[in-house]
Every structure is written in C-alpha cells, then in structure tokens.
Length: 213
Image (cartoon, rainbow, N blue to C red):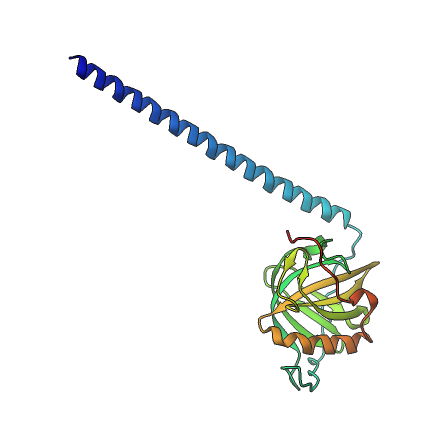
C-alpha cells in the first residue's frame, strides 16, 4: 500500500510539473508575441513619422500621355543592349536623399520596394510598379546615374544596383533599381548620363560605411 501511495504521489507531482511547464511555455510565447507586436508598432510609427516629415515633397510626376519611343542603347563593347530599346524589368529597392544611402524617402509610396518596369525615352524615365504607385522622372530633372551596391539599407554585390539621381521639388533623390539581367545596367548608365548632360557631384559613387538594416 505504501508503494502504491508513493507511486500515486509521484504521478501527481509529475502531472503538476507538466502543467507548470506548459504554463511557463505559454508565458514565454505570449511575451515573445507582445515583443514582436511592439517592434512592429514602433517600426510602423517610425515610418509614419518619416512620411510626415517628408510631407513637403510634391506629388510624384506621372508619365505624359505621349511618352515617345524608347531610347536605343548605344553601341558599346561593354553594353548588352546594343541598338535595342532601353527597357528594364527588375526590382525597385527604394529612394533616399542623394548621397545618403540610409536617409530613406517614404512619401508618396517611394519607400515601398516592388517589382518595376522601366522605359527610357527622350522625355524621361517611366517607372511602372505593380502594387505600388507609378512615377515618372522627367529628362529635365535627371542629374546622373551610376552603378552602386546599396541603397535604403539594401546591400547587393558591387555594381549590382542602378542608381538614378534626379531632382524633385527642392530635393535631390537617389532611386535604386536592379535589373533581372544586371549586365543591362551599363547601357542604362551611359544613356542616362548623356540625357542628363553628364554626372553631377551628387551622382558620384557613395561610400557605405554603415551596416545595412
């Protein structure tokens, strides 16, 4: 009888311990979910705050009704689009204040990463983005283009990013794109540099010393 009583006591103690372990685990899970929710809320509020600070940025230009024929790529030993229309399918990685790769611009949807279809004509660059606002960079506002490796906290391989520098309102903006075929970037830099009248100081390669986020 004593043995049975002892066994019953051990079983009851084990059951109580299992219940306590589950309660502790549930507490950890709830605590972790609360921390994740708090981080998400802080990020969202920070995004909204940044958008408020950039409220003076004018609405994005839209492509003209008659944008013109796509520009032809220049014949070049380093270009892969010799004589072909300059169109690009790839990703839009974000926009920042020119020369400041972490100072992200989020107003008017510029902070939303997305797929992008670019077309270059004599009037400028048309940027079509499924699921995000389209915009247009007029030729008169182009300030240069370069190959780079990072923008808006996104880091790629050296030269893996096409960065277009342009003026909008009183801001100078860097917008970063990556083609599905990165070898196309050189032809775009050549054509954009010519259309803009040559690279500006702000379009010079930036040096990234901060870590990505």
